[in-house]
Image (cartoon, rainbow, N blue to C red; front, top):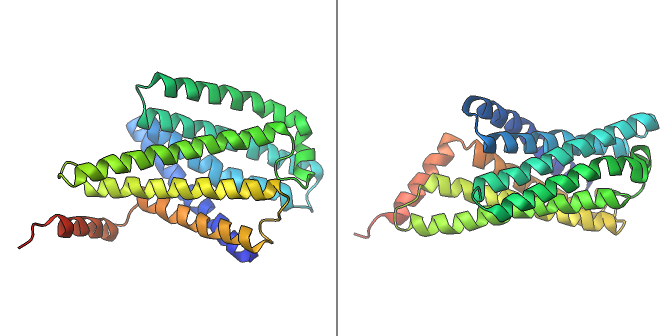
Length: 255
């Protein structure tokens, strides 16, 4: 079952490496913050953070110093990625909300404090060599805050989809935009659930790749999140035409 976990994790890394730079290039042209923050989130968390953490954990031929270095790079990438996702949620869905701004400010402050703390407790080398996936309180808090950002993204996208579908029935929303936002909600929901299950199982001492349940979870949810993220940001024209045709067939008046 290890191959299934590899497929799920590998697909997420591949999609992140493709979508992240494209969004960053788009942000360079438009100067818009949502593209910048989501590009950073995908590239740093999925493109670099996950592979670097994996190398730090399993690359036993490397010296302890190099494994600790790779883990430190992974922690930095994930911290910036989580921060970028929180800013994306705020500026995209609730730009006028003072509460959302305060939540993001608090989250960024805590993540910033946890970054050096994780290097001390338990230490990067000790963390890379530990049998625990997230040894020490700072690492566990970083994961929890990351889950908060992920579930927030899922919840906001889901609420927008519900509103857009109501407007769609009145002809007041674009079917492609509604579909793409729905795909994004599925992607964020799958990623959130995947991360949650992986965290709980690792906390319980379960070897995820070796466990049929763990490998199946990582594989299925990872592939689901990757495919829906791809269709949300880079949908093929054939898929877009199909979405419009489906909407036209549903909304056409009965003869």
